[in-house]
Image (tube, rainbow, N blue to C red):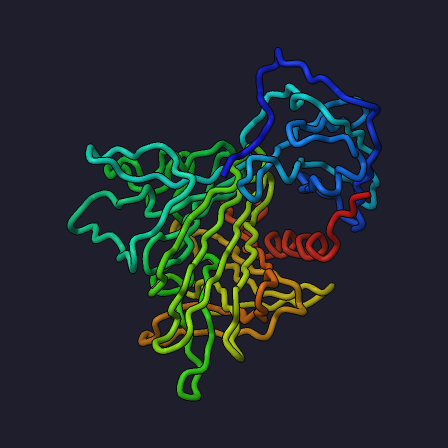
Length: 419
C-alpha cells in the first residue's frame, strides 16, 4: 500500500490553489485532549474544496501556522483517501482551521511518532527491508529457538509502535500479540531482536518485552466462540487459514495502519470457511492500539472474543459507563516484575459478556475475556491499553492507571466533531 505523508525538505514551497476554507474541530468532552487524531476524508474534503484533484494535497493551518498532515491511501489505488493530523484541544474547545488545495504538502520537518514493519531473515542472518505485503506459510509453526537463534521474521512477525508503546503479532499458528514496554519516544523496532546476543527479555535503555503470553491471547488477540456438539468452543485465529495475508497501509509519521486478512478460515472441520479482516492502527501520543474486525459472514450464535493475560494478576475489574464497556487489570505483572496496567475498551452495545479461562488443558487459557457481538460486514471496534510504570511513573499505582482509563472512556465515548 502506498503511503503519502509530508515531504520534509524545508526548501519545498507549497503552491496553494483557490481561497482557503474553514473547518471546525470540536472537542465535545470536558477533558483536554492531547494528540487527538483528526481524520479528514477525501470525499468530505471535496465538498469543502470541489476543485481538489486526485494529484493535489491540502494545506491545513491553525492561526496561519501550517500543520503536519499525513496522507494515507487506504484502498491502494494510488490516490490518498484520508488526511490526518494530531491536535491538542482544551475542554469543549472548537478549533477553527483553514484548509486549501495545494500542489505539494506543506514543507514541515516530521518527527516519526508511529511505525509498522514486517521484515524477513536473510541467508546471512541479517533482516531485509520492510515488506508491505506478506503471506504466512500455511499453519506456520512457532520458531524452535533450541534449533535456531533467529526466527524467519524479525521479532517473529509484524511489529507496530508509537512514541509510548509497541506491540508485535506472532506470524504463526499462535497468532497472539505481545507488548514492547518503551522508555524512549523514538522508534526502536527496526533493531529489537536483530541480534540474538542481545535479549529483548532483559531491560535496556529503550525498554523490553514486558508481557508473558503463553497460551493466552496476550495483548488483545482474537478468538471465535462457537457451539460444537452443544458446547462452547474457543477457536484461536490463525490456524487452518487457506491464506493469511499481511498488508501495510500506512507507516507514519503520525499514524500507522496494517491489515491481516484471514482468507477462507476453516475454523472448525466440516463447516463453510469464513474470511475475516482485522485492521490495526496506532497513532502518536496514545497508550493503545485500535482494532477493527470485519467478518465476511458469521456462524450462528458466534462471538468474537479478545482478552488479556491473567498470569500475575488474578483479579480483573470491569467498566461500563458512558456507553463504553471493558475490563482491566493492574498489578506487578510485567516481565520486569513492576507495575503494569492492561485494559480493553469497546462500545458497550457490542459487549456480550466477560469471562476467565485458566484451565491448563484449554487451547486458549490464562486469559480474561470479552465476548463481542459480530455481524457480517460490520466492523467491530475495540482498543487495547497499556500503562507501564517505566514508561510513565503515573502508572506506578493502580489509581494512576485508572485515572488514565477514566479519561479514555470519556474520549472514546465522545469522539471529535468535524464540521
